[in-house]
Image (cartoon, rainbow, N blue to C red):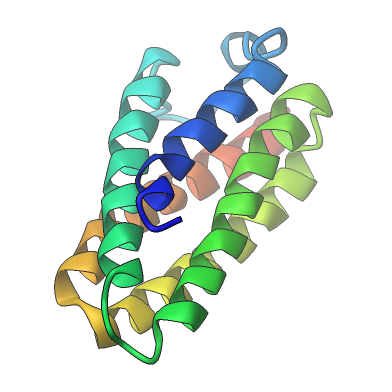
Length: 148
């Protein structure tokens, strides 16, 4: 199970992509806020983030910390929300619900970073780029609501 955590984010991201690939072109057709990155940026950024998240969760899972079970549970909950976001946004075009998911994700990732920090500073630090990207996603998602 511990080694599976290394690939779980990549696997989940791939499955999420498969579920939305027929509708992903919506990003190119909707109005976006200023500074919205081109679509190709997302696959590159998410691949890097999923790798960092996998390594981070593996560090925590292989620790001897009494907090590791709680930490992994919060992390897994955030992964579920992460993987749900794409179908909600792309397939259902429910931009408001997808924004709510991002808000919940930000809260869960902040909690994950906080509890990871009790276990490993490195594991917590590896999650910070994900948190930053979630704020970018919040900006884009909120902007899409405003401009559409």
